[in-house]
Length: 202
Image (cartoon, rainbow, N blue to C red; front, top):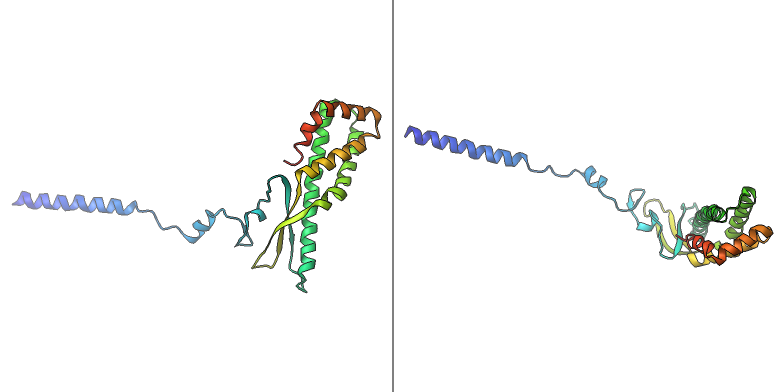
């Protein structure tokens, strides 16, 4: 009888230990802050927003986001013009960087040592593109923040259009230097320049 009572007491102790152990392994409920920290969705000012407002990307085009704040008169047309101008500024900056990289790569390919001439040509082409290429840019999507009233525009310009304009501008610029233009024609014939131009819209 004494052994039976002892065995029962031991059994209860083991069961209690098992339940206590299982109970301690239960995951704590996720706090609101932890849930927010783990949320990688696109947000603007704490509000869920279209993915392109965080990461502008459009297949076959160079893309940028233009943003304009809500104005005092609630003039939607003026706000849209401001957002469009902001987006085009970003596009111009992207294209300028790509043109600069194109010239650096082309300079390395041709082995030309005249850095001043290349820098001048690069600057001229960038300015020309800012006035010509961006004329073809357009807004393809928009979103207004319900919290701030800010307008977001997805502004793009087609890769093919940029490449064509860059090539024309490069030709015009290089024609001012006979030696460089001959190198340009040789590189173009070998497909070297086309390979670099194809990277413009990527």
